[in-house]
Image (cartoon, rainbow, N blue to C red; front, side, top):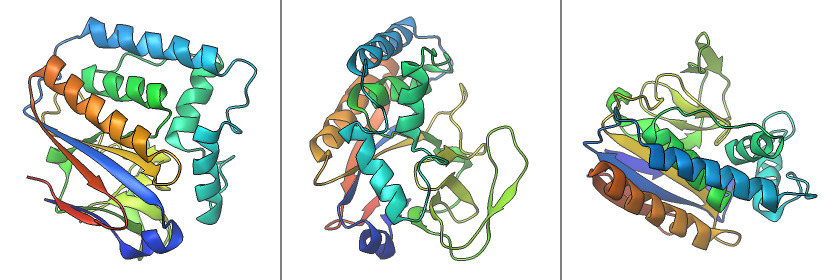
Length: 233
């Protein structure tokens, strides 16, 4: 399988970069209280960090809002996943205990203030790509009915359908990670000139903790304008 970021993405967002972790042979069925504890710790740390601070204006969030505007997307209507996650926590909400992998990804997203996703690879068809939609393309939102994504929207997509709408806004029902997921693709999206070091640190810590908690096989990758395609073994 290949993971590719299309040339057109770099024309619009020249400094965009992607850390990637792929975990294989994961046992995600077992409750892992230590990961839930880690998630709660990161929630507390975020609430403390954002006391008296506007989430929208924080530099870690603002860079994604600016990118959304450049892409013609209203970040107030369609906040990035990390902005939505942080906003929920700052308002006092507690993130749900979903499963070990998702809890871990959410905890690290809060720790590093980065959008981080998780996609079930076994539900995927063909290669995965970050690109603009070319025609009306299908997407199934969480718990919703299928819809068509209009041409020209930045998405994660495989050969069959859109996996994430509006770049890092909302993932597909068909690609969600469940307790039964065994092979999982996890991207970390950022910018070379804003948070590249955080992207790499989040990628590496995610890989380390996956190995520690799940005893699974892990691969790490990195893409930017100088490396736009990787082969996922």
